[in-house]
Image (cartoon, rainbow, N blue to C red; front, side):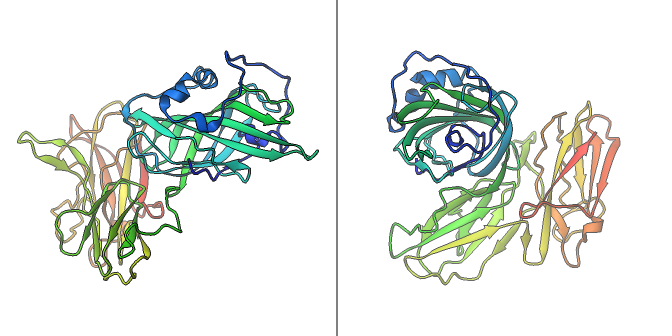
Length: 417
C-alpha cells in the first residue's frame, strides 16, 4: 500500500488516542459477527474487504459504487465533511471532519493509496478501485502504532473505504469516507474491534499523484525517466521528436511517466473533446488544440525530468469555459464569436458549433479550450461565450471576458440559470 498519510482531529480512529480536542459523546456499540483481530496485511483482494464484517457494517452506512470502468481518481486531496454514523469514542454524529489523502494511478483494479500520519505504517495491504462513469469506491487498509501518555502502545489495524463522484476538475463530491477497526494489539483504551465511522463531504484535488516519487529512477539506467503533469481538463497527447504516434496519453488533471533515451525533444497536443458523431460518422470535435514543443532535453542517463503542461504556452493563454445548464431546455454554445483568430474560422473555436446540445445538468460540461490572450489575435476583454436555446436558436445568455481563470487549468465555470 505504501502508506504516508495525515488524518486530522475527528477524521477518525487515528486521532482518538492523541486526544486532539474532539467532542465526546456516550458510548454506542456497533456489533459485528467476528470479534477477533484481523491484520491489515490480510486484505489482498476486493473479496477480502467485502467478506470482512466491519466492512459490511461500513457499507450499510455508505454507498458502494460497483463496476470495472471507474474514473481516474489520481491525485492528492484535502477533504472535509460531517460524521453520519460512528461508534468511535470521542466522536458523534454531526461532528465536522477534515483530512488529506492521496490516490495513485490505477493499474487494473489495483491502486496505490496514501493516508498521511506519522503513526501510520505500511502493513502490506493491497488497495483497490471499482466503479463506473464518474462514480468510484476505493478500499485500503493500514496499521497505526500510537504511544499513549502512560508509555504503553496501541497498534490499530484499520480499513478505509472511499465512495464518491469525480468531478470534471478532478475534485470529489458526494464523498463518503468510512473507517473501521479490524484489529487491535496492545493497550488501546476504549477502542474496540468493529468500531466504525462514516462521514459525508467533499474533497479538493490539491496536487498530483502520490506515485510521483522524487527518488524514482528509470528502470534502464541508460534511459531518462520522464514525468508529464497534465493540468488541463482534456486528455493530453505527448510525442517525441518527429513521431506522429503519441508516446503517451495523459488523462485530465493527471500525471503520466515513460522512459526515453537522452537528448529527446518533447512536444504535446491537447485532445479536443468529442460531442459525438455527425451523420457521416465523423467525430464532432470541440475547441482549439493547445500545443507546444520544448527545447531538446539535456538530462543525463539515469536521471529524471518533469514537464508541466498548463493553459499557457509561451505567451499564448487559453481558457476552458465549463458551462452548467440550469435552464429547463437544452443549450448550445458559441465561443469567441466575432473574433478572428488566425487558423480558425469565424467564429473561431466556436464551442458546440456543430449545434450539439447540452441537456440541463447540475454538473459542468467540458467543451474544450479556446484562445484567451494571444498577442495580435485576441485579448481577454474580447473573449466571450454565448448560449442559445438548442431548439429555437434564440440566444439566452452571454458571458464576456476578462474571466477569472483557475491557475494551471485555465477553467472558468459559467452558470446559465
